Amino acid sequence: MKILRASKYDIRTIVKLNFFVQNIHHEAHPNIFKPYNEDEEINSFFEQQLSDQNNYIFLAFLSDIPVGYLWAQIQQIPETPFTFSQSRIFIHHVSVDEKFRWKGVGACLMDEVTKVSKNLDIPDIAVDTWAFNNEANHFFRSQGFDSYNFRMWNIKRNAEPTSGADGV
Image (cartoon, rainbow, N blue to C red; front, side):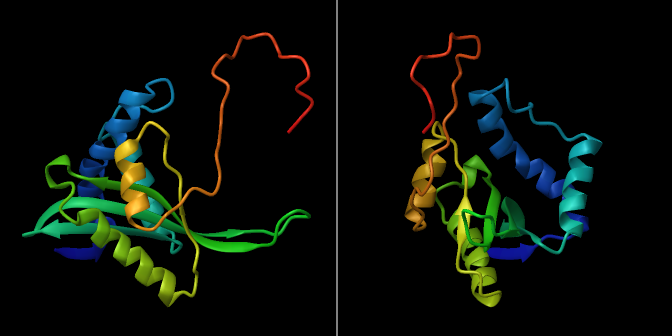
């Protein structure tokens, strides 16, 4: 397997591979996630990400066939009165062609992020996953990730407020 850092010449490949992650999310939450498309807006989005030196997009190839990508970003979180400043690498997307899942593609992509983390002396790597995405959750746990935060939402948007909810 070959892993390369993507360039602007790889945008069309990234957009095509985006199908595998975008489709999962759109099927689960069509009210939040747009359907997959290859329009100019998506191409421009990835072009912008690639032009930012804090973004790393890696492509995975098997026999010169692109089979997946990972998009990570170095983030500087400022100090607040409540928390210390923090540097971390945040993984936005991992997308692997479904025909090549569970063949080590994701693990190889994660290895590249780990190398960046070590080279830049940024020990923290974070990722958000959706509760419904059991396959992604299993994958990230297999890569040593553990839950550190839970984000919840109230989908009863028009419900009456509950009494006694003064705060958490």
